[in-house]
Length: 303
Ligand code: GDP
Image (cartoon, rainbow, N blue to C red):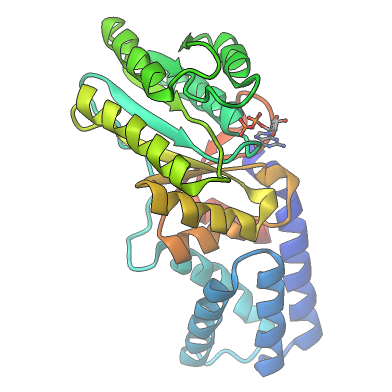
């Protein structure tokens, strides 16, 4: 239910415009598909993804010999789910954490996207699942980042390992790992700095942090989650490209989906970069982080 509410803006825009198209055209023709393309692009599905999608849709419509636009609606939902999964079976992406010993989650993303908030929400979520969670304040660069993470630590009732502002992020993460190990914690979530201005610095810093994690915890990092702000639309897509060049991103947390009609970016990220969206942020509260379910998402668009 919360999911539906959080998606309200995308849903209204998207289903409103599609319903309008369907009512206006009634019969399926080239112009109908062209306008449909426009609607999808406006919802930030991404041009490449839209073109793939509309090609597939046209083939399916032809195969089933559909003539009425009203009948196309169900096929649109189906094909949107297909375009999300590509060649894979439908499934909901889980975090790949180890069942024994410490799991490490590295969280990356540009300042302002909701990285700190998402870490707080994720810590709360994992704690609710019965896991012992520790946070490492690896964003030593942004003013106030450490205090903000501590606030979330208090709220979620998890310990935060930190050093002074400006200290070496890799050293903070190292401390975090030692603390998490000595407390027999299940999950360590590591914050990182979100500077993108200098790509070489970003790469070097992430590489260094990752080396420490790999050395100290076999099999780690178990997840590298990239936080993206859905309201930035195509900009989020380009951030995803940059970060996936800098490090192996294993999943995405897409924030602020409640504040935008650009929810279609979910499909573009998956289709163009093949990185699964694992969680979506649907508000500013601790409970507002939901596991991403492509079916619920796509069918929610038409609900
Ligand atoms: P950071 O700089 O990436 O760590 O970003 P913050 O975690 O400080 O978040 C920036 C702002 O976005 C804050 O005001 C958050 O409350 C807000 N925010 C984060 N996630 C969401 C979300 O899913 N929905 C909404 N509406 N706001 C969010």
